[in-house]
Structures are given as structure tokens and as C-alpha cells.
Length: 492
Image (cartoon, rainbow, N blue to C red; front, side, top):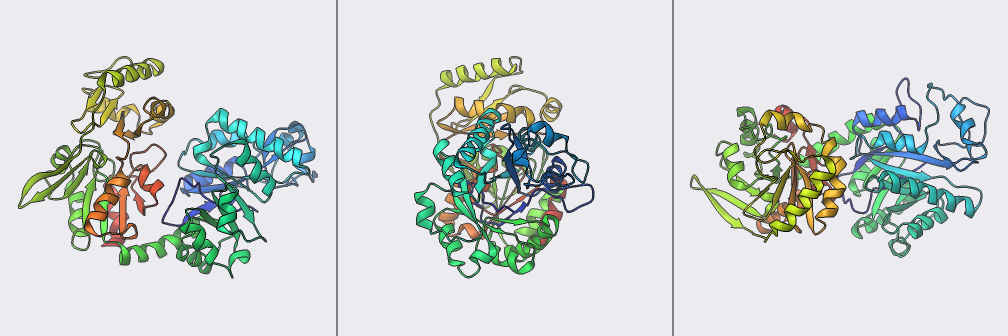
């Protein structure tokens, strides 16, 4: 059994759900299979745990093990890869390789993989396991989606040694780790069996306060879910993810209605279709919420565009990822802040041209990029004058832009890069993103982070709402803007 912990770069305020060995608690599935992974992806959990072994001929396979269910083999680590792959599991699946698992997992980049490195007979075999896993992570660019976990402290230490910056957490069913030890050893957090920590819950609080991540496992009951949420545990590992989603969702809704005071909205994809006017239904949602909370808009576009797109709805707007701020005072739209940053257009154009050439986007309408007055740059792959219909059809699942994201980030390493709109990347000066924009506003108006709720549509890595998730702010994801009222009715 494994337990888990989210990456140190993520500081989620709300406890999230990890599906232990995938979602296998339904007909036709089995633990640690591609079927159980696909089930967890469809269910929409935030994390999944998987177990990796090294075969006798040094291949990486996913199995809790060591016995292979449905076969006579008692130790997967003593078998060669071909023999392992010949085995048929109880649901008809075969034991997946780690490469196969990564390939499927990459289809949902927001899903965090908590990769348990299983203990092996010798330190040398464990080191080889660590080396091979890291090599595959390098090849497939998986680090943003993985936290490495293990009951073997030797394996944890080897990952820290072999890959600087890797997110590593020991799993414990016996030992209690002090915050100082975790930090000294370069770990990003710790994962506890609830029996180990239940009489020492202060250690969860101390780790959280120190910025370390905590996980509790196994969590399959109301009492443990409530304890985890009360102590701000980052992930609960559960064998019943669907039931836990419903249970924790109900608890969270009650807590949020009592504690939230500021609700922040993204616009495109959340309240409206891209670059289309706000509907009467979305306006009614805002009208209702404003009777109980302060409500503001936080967008990638500039304030004036957002204001017009909202049909001049009287609301505070933080535009261009916080570089601008507007209010409506006595019925009149007014800009109250306009930060500006210098942009070297020649250098930008050169980098954009190289990216277009590499990915084949050399034909476009209008200009290659929009240079905003604030200093934000929008790099539209179809150009600044492309047709709306072409934009909507270009990259609806953002797969094309996700394939480019790391190269765009590398080209503009001193800036923030977000996947924006339907065809573009938004490039902002360092320090400007939606999380920092909201927290700046909150500090100026007397709100704490726990009093804020963000409503957006793209919290995945590189998404324009992603910094909200990374910063640890509570959020609700909207997957259909026409149903935003249904998602938020519990807050009325």
C-alpha cells in the first residue's frame, strides 16, 4: 500500500483526493492497470498512486505485487519482462509498463502521479530502479506530473541525490518524521498511515506550516476525511475515490459558504464563450452572488475589453494578469491602476519567429503577436486577425499548445507563460499572474487567502488559472460555462 503527497510546488488549501492504485472499485477494472488509470481520469480525481518494480531483466512494470494476481508467479522482480507481460490479470488487462502508464497519464496533465518505488533486495537494485525511472521521466518530460514516494528511505535519498529538484516523500507506517529531518534530507513532504500519526496530529500541522506537503492514508471514512480536512492535509489516499469525492465535496461546500467573502471569476470559458458577450444567465449568477459576497473579475485580457465583453457590468476587474485594475464608480468605468513593463519587441519577434518555424505556424492572419500597452504579449498561433470560427476549431483541448509549452517557457524564461484564449499564449512580466493579482487585491482590502474562492476553467499546468492552484487558493473548475450557476448554487 502506498501513500502520497503532492509536489512541493503545489500548496493546495483544499484537501484533494488520490485514487489508490487507480479507480478499480467498479466492474471490469483491477488495481494498477491502464483500465484503473483511465477510470480515475474519467472520474476527475486530482491524484493517483501507482507502484513500480524492476524486473529481472531491468524493465519497469506497474504492479503492487510482488505476486501477479491470476498467475502462479509469486515475485515479479524475479521474472523477465516477457513473462510478466504474458500474464493476464483478473479483469483481462496485462501488467502495464511504466512507459505505457506515462503515455496514458499524459492525456490528463493535471493528474498528479504519486509514483511509489517498491523496495528491492539490495541497495544496488534500488539505485538502478531509481536511475531507470528518472531516465524515463527525462525522456517523456514527466517531472511536472510526478511525486516520488517510497517506504525505502534509501530510494527516497537516491532520487534526491540523482535529480535535483525532484519531489520526494517517504511513506511511513511506523516512523514519525520531524519537520527538521524532512527538510534536512531534501524531502518535499511526508505520507503517513493514519494509525501512525493519529496521536501526533501536530506533526501534520507543523509540516504544513513549514510548506511541506502531507498525505494521510488509507482514508475511507467520514471521521478520517474530516480529520484530514481540519489539519489541511494536502491529499487523502483512498480506495473509494467516488464516494470520497461526494463526501468531501459536501463537507467543503458547507465550510465555504460560511467562510468565503471574496469570489473571483475568470471570464472566457467560465462565464462566457471565448470573446463573446456575457449571457443573461451568467449575469444572474453574478447578481445573486453579489448579494452575499464581494465578486470581482480576474482575467488575461485588458480591463476595457473585459468590461465591454461583460456588457458594461459594474464590477471590479483585474486585467492582464493583474497589470491593470478598473472600478465602476458612480456608473462610470475608471482605470485605477495601470502597471507597465518595457518589452524588447525585436527580441520577442525573433523568438516567436523561431517557434513558428519549429512548429509549422508560419502562416497567419494579421500580426504574429499582440503587444499590450501594459507590456503583456499575446502570441496567437493563427495571428491577431484570424477568424473566430477558425480559433474555436483550432485547439479546443489545448493539446497543440501543450506540446509547445515547454519550448515557449524556455524561450521566455524570465517571464510567465500561460495558455490563453483558444489559439494563444499569454506572456507576462515576472510577478504578474492571477494568484498574485488576487492576493494583492486581498491584502489591500483586508481578505485572507482562506476567505477567497476562485472560479475558473483551466487550472492544469500552463493554464491561465494554474497559478491559483499552485498558490494554494481554493477554487472551483468550470467545464461548461452554460452550467456555472449549477456549480455555484450551493454558495447562494
